[in-house]
Structure formats: structure tokens, C-alpha cells
Image 1 (spheres, rainbow, N blue to C red):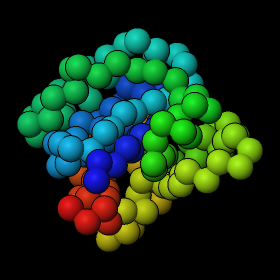
Image 2: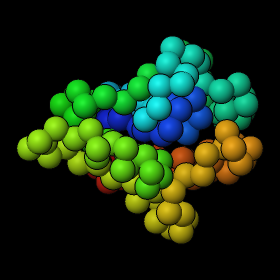
Image 3: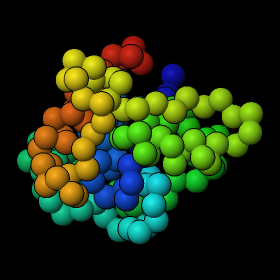
Image 4: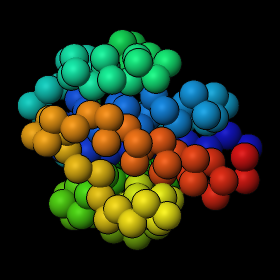
Length: 147
């Protein structure tokens, strides 16, 4: 079974494209995408420092382009994962009536880290710390999906 998973953060230039890149490397048969709750960076590639940090781990993000989350994503994906509580609130605000697509915090799949969210490295400048959490959550998600 091919899973359709959407990773969501604020601007779609750091956390969510990194999560998409890390997860697609783990599960190449999954259909993945990423989006931001804000539209500031639509059409732009992931932030240079995040691309460099990911590339140092063998993850290529260069083909990704930012887009904004939309209500239609609830029907296009089986699982929507937000990077923090604010992302989840923004996602839920667009949920169509009657839609039951699961929306979860990505770090739920990395409980061993104790993290409640993936801090935004655009502001913290800790790209490697964000990638450590993203890798842990991606591995947990793969286990959850039975891979």
C-alpha cells in the first residue's frame, strides 16, 4: 500500500521540506509532499542552510518548491503531519466539514526524544538539531506504517 503523507510547517522552506526529503529517502514508495500554512515563499526552493545541512546527511532537497497548505489537501492525503501546535491549529482551521483525515504532530512519532515540536531552524539557526528530530520522527513514522 502506498501511503500519501503531507508534512506541514509555517513557510515550507525548512522543516516540512526536510521532513519530506528524509521520509522519502526512508520510504521511496510513499507519496509525500510538503506545504506551509503561510504563503510567503510559494515557488521557492528550501532555505539554503537547510539544504546544506540535509545534503551533509545525504538528503537532496533541491527539487522541492514551497507551496501553501489548502483545504483540498485533506482529500489528497491519508495523513497530515504538522511540525508544531500552531501549524496544527492552522491546518484544522481549514478542515472541511465531515472530513476525517488524521492530522497529527510529527513529533508524536519520536516520543523517545521528549520533543513536543520541531523548533523552526529559520529562527533558531539549529538546522542539525531540527534534522535530528526529523530523522527520529521519520523512523518512528516508518515503523508505525509497518515498514
